[in-house]
Image (tube, rainbow, N blue to C red):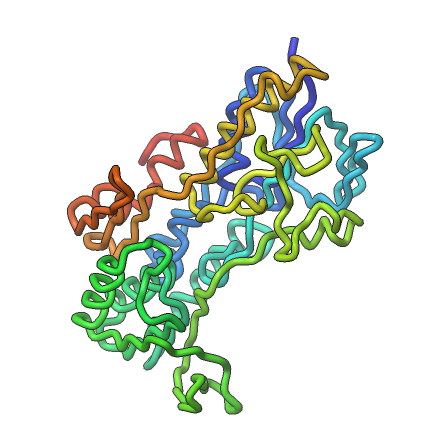
Length: 368
């Protein structure tokens, strides 16, 4: 006999891990607007190289042995009747609800359209635009901006590529100035123009961009890698704005429960846990939430006694590929210091495969 009905809204990294962990003990329903898992880590390369177009899409059909996938859009939550209402009208009863709707990323790290075929066509459009561009501008010098700049440079060695960043150095989120210097050195040695302390905005004329000093830059293609937005507008529209903080993230307590809602959890990029929004953190949150949900379902009324508090991941390895065979890895070491590792470690850990074999195994497929 299973412990209860768990509805997970969102089939990203955190949602998939949590649904898989609870599949053997609860009646799990995974709700996602997409028909396939979107491996976002592979999306930057897929938006540049045609041979990678299909790589980010992994079917959900082998993820759950006992639970089920519902392709649809959640539009309302009834916390009194304990139901999730989908756009098509279907109502999903729950004993525990998990909000794992993630965040919206700028293109090309985005699933566009409603099907894998539509998203693949958008990737193809990016690839053709990059192949024909004379000057590509990337705005944002964090991990995504640096990675995209390297991918475009390697695919288009003859094009002009500019990376503009508002800060004084690249990769500040890694906490390592050395990593930022290494990234800048790689980009500049490969002919990428790096502009630091450069706030960019669209110019007055088509295909022009203006910096904070009034300078105008012309580029026929641009990508903005300047951050993400939590996918919580639907919650606000559904009347649950009080569940959100000022930035639109879901407010959670130390056990990853929505504040004031012991039967509703939020995991991954969507919540307000103060840590870097990276995949290892999302997976760690899913593990803690799965344990706490199991405790809640087995012991109603004694949830707090058996639950675990989530410990925010403030120091986690950060891997930034520069194409498939180079990059930088920032590895925390005891004492609060960091080690900066180079191409060999980065290639083995992420750059070559972009963790695709790992995610395929997570969804029940072979690594290849």
